[in-house]
Structure formats: structure tokens, C-alpha cells
Length: 292
Image 1 (cartoon, rainbow, N blue to C red):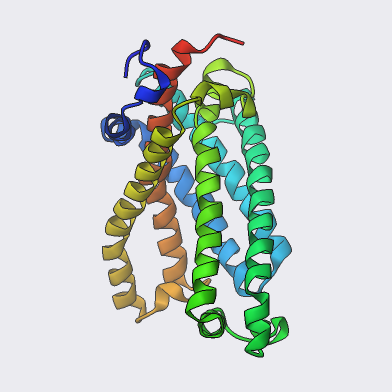
Image 2: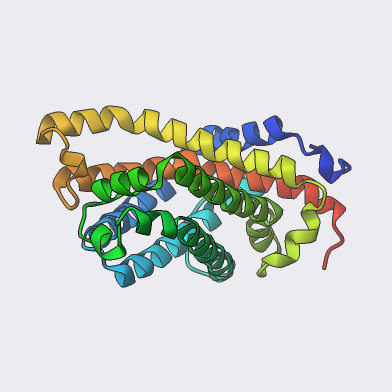
């Protein structure tokens, strides 16, 4: 992608390839950040899983926010490296860039939370009648395990109710993906220009939403696939060492080790490619946007 390329000419595969190529080129520089992410995000994930297991909504929300802020610190380090095209170190620090990126993260998080609550409300309203007709109440669901509750809900909904629920979920997922694609340049712009850029970048991506959404989706799916492949042998090894299903026992040693490994892997296969992708797109698309 060149500086004189129109927004609707965003090269999807080239951009996605550049996202992963950034990690392949700079993995040595990224390694210290990955170790920090493994300890910080891995530890937070363990506590988050424990909070979910005891259905502590307050602790779950708080830990989710803290994890998002830690990810912002990691993303700032990787974006500095990607935007400088390998010249700046991917060092972890707490300064203006990090606080600016945290502010943008919280702004987006609040928006997505509102959308999620609206989506959840509509989904619940859509299926409440079917559940009530099947004699499945909220109190009854809360008394069941997550797996059993999900099974009984799906049985109560039937094929029509499940289809309605699926359509609602997909519609709101598509909405979030569209918004995220239109705001894709906010994070690199915040680092590159030294001040918070959140919703003001919306106009920068006009006419490119579908291509940017494809870029974002491919990077996310590619990261998930690579993470699963990388973690699978460790999951098998931990089950062999600690017993079958040990990694699913929240708070157990196997679960803690796998959580730390998953956080380490996520820096290379999720956060890193995202930083590489958005930095590449920023360099190509910002040149056409008047500087505010």
C-alpha cells in the first residue's frame, strides 16, 4: 500500500501478511514484552477465571478492565516498534503513550459494553417467552452448571429460538466488527502523534470499512489458529503430567501454567500481528488525511 492509494484500495492480504511479518522480523525485540505479558496477563487470567468460577461479577469486571489496561501497555510497546519499522525498542514503560492508549482503550471499552448490553437485552427479550413456555426460569438456570445450563437453554429454545438467538448475536458481532474496523487507526495514531485519537479517526477510514474489517477478521482468526496450534502440545503434556482435565481445573498448577503460556503466545500471535497490521495501515492511510 502506497501513500497515494485511495482508502477503498486497502490491500487485504498484503496488510494481513505485514501484520504477521512484523512479528517474524522482530521476534527477538518482542520477546521481553512477551515475557512481561506472560506474567502480567497470565496471572490476571488465573484470577479472572477464579472470579468467574465463583460468579463474582464485580471482580470479573474489575479484572477485565485491568487486563485491558495491561494489554494497552503491551500494545504501546509493540506499536512503537512497528511504527518505527524496527528502529525503536519494544520496551515496556508507563508514560504518556501508555496513558493515552489506556484512555482510548477505556473509551472503546465503554462503547462496546453499551453495545453488548443492548445486544444481550434484545437477545434475552427474543427468547424469554420460549424459555418461560418451557418452564425454564432464571432461578433454575442459575442453580445449574454452565454446561448444563447451556444445554437446557438450547433444548428449551428449539431450532427456531436458536436461530433467532444466533441472528441477534451475529448482527451485534458484525456491528462491533464494523465499528472496530472504522476505528482501526486510533491506536497507532495515538502513539505516532503523541495524543489521544479515538473517535476522531472515524473519517480517516471512510470507504474502507469492508476491507479493514476483512483485515481485522483475518488477523484475529489467524492469531487464534496459531495460538491453538502452539498451545496444543503443552495442553497434552500438562494433562499427562497432572492428569486428564487438569488444565481445566481453575487455580490448579496445570491451569496456571497454561494461562501463562497462553498469555505469552498471545503477544506473538494476537497483539503483535494487530500492532503490525494497524501500524502498516496507519502509514499508508494517514498520508491522505489532513493533520488535525
